[in-house]
View 1 (tube, rainbow, N blue to C red):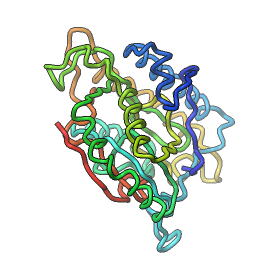
View 2 (cartoon, one colour):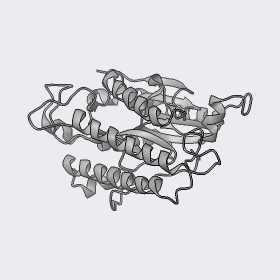
View 3 (cartoon, rainbow, N blue to C red):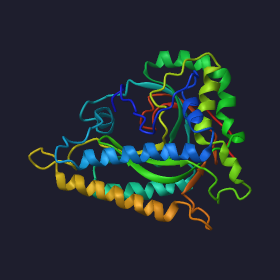
Length: 318
């Protein structure tokens, strides 16, 4: 992914006078969990329709290969190559039941795109807050020292602020695939039977807002590319065109249609198996209370693909 890649908000306008970029959506949704979920769903469905049309079009020019990841995976391309981009982030680590769903989704995607790179299970993460990206290691180390006093309370924050996400679905574009969730809004909760519907009033978007505020309070400037209403974990990336091109180097339209149909089929399966149904508990894998098992993971280094870099501190889970 290009370091300059940004994410377009397709959920609607979010005017605000706040310095915190997450406040606008909360204000536009009247601080209401159901409205916040609807905005996340609007973004997800609009982006899904946009990308489906793009990848299905006879004018589609081909998938976007992640050339840095390709060189990391195949050292014969450029022996000794190392990712120069260093980041500073707070990650949410998925619990085993979410990782299990992702493993099945990855298996189904690999069936139609065998050369697709899939995120290893131990590398899976959702970026709760990206402080910065694509800097040098010394630049990141300077920022770490600035934010370090706040790291313990930030990484432990999900222990006492338990935002929940539900309704998993696959999102994709010409570069990558992700499993995305929506902030919960009072649906039944099988992960914690003591949880009340009103506990969902504190949404994942509230958590992102608070992490931004807590981090900014250390004096550090948060320079994230990513503030759109999405809660997703990247699960696969294109590192070659061999699955999606014909022998003469043209886009294989039939294969692209097959990939799009596979995603549609996976999403139907996810919806039927893991989405909440009135009167029934959500099946394991269909919900995730952020902080289950592990608190937030404060990480630094060349960690674009999950396996690089190092943990500064892992927060307390529940």
